Length: 250
Ligand code: 13P
Image 1 (tube, rainbow, N blue to C red):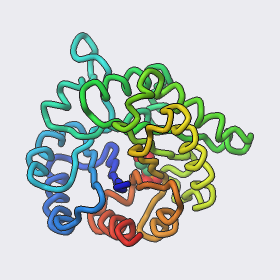
Image 2: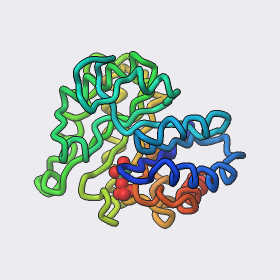
Image 3: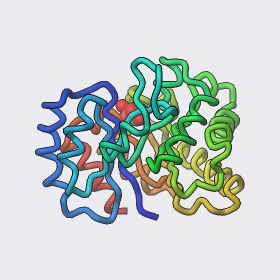
C-alpha cells in the first residue's frame, strides 16, 4: 500500500505565504514517488496552489466542502468548485468541524457520498474525546463515526481514506503512543474489512494528532498506520519534509 502524508493547514497561511512555502517545499520532494503527499491549504489559496502544484508530485486537498452542487448555502463551498480547481482530496468530518462547528454524523455522511460521487478522494476523520477515552468508549465512538460516515458507500472504500485523530491529541503536543494508535488502527482495519466485504485494501488509515518529526518514526512503524494527517508541524516546510522522510524509511 502507498502511504499518504497529508498536511492540514487549517486556518493558516495567506495566498502569498502558501506560495512562499511551496517554493521551498516542492524542490525538496520532487524526486519522491513512493509515497503520496498532499497539502490542504485555506480555501482562498486553493486556486493559486492548484496552479503551482499542477506539474508536481504533490496532491491538492480541501479542508471541507458542502454536499450540494450549488444553491442558497451562504458561505459554503461546493464539490464542483473543488473539481474545477483539480482538487484531489477533501478532509471530511475533522474534529474541529465536529466540535467547533457542530457537524453531525449524518451531515458528514452526505459529504462523504458527495465527494465520492464527484471523484474527490475523501479523508474521513474520526476520533474520541478525552472524556470518551477515559470512559472506555473509544472503540464505540470510532465505530459509530465510521459506520455512519460510510453508510451507502461501503462498496466504494477503495476511493476513501480514514484518519484516526484522537481529539485529545490534536494541537496539544501529546500524541497517541504507537500502542494506542495501533489498537485503534487495528480495530478500524477489521471494521473496514467487514463493512467492505474485504474490499478495503486500498483504504489507508492515517494517524493524526501532534505528529512531528520526532515521533513520526515510531508511529509509522506500527502495522495499519498507513500515513499521517499533520497539522501544526506541516506549517513548516522543513518539518513536514522531515516527517515525509521518516515515512520513506519504513
Ligand atoms: P496537529 O498536528 O496540530 O495536532 O493537528 C492534527 C490535525 O488535526 C490534522 O488534521
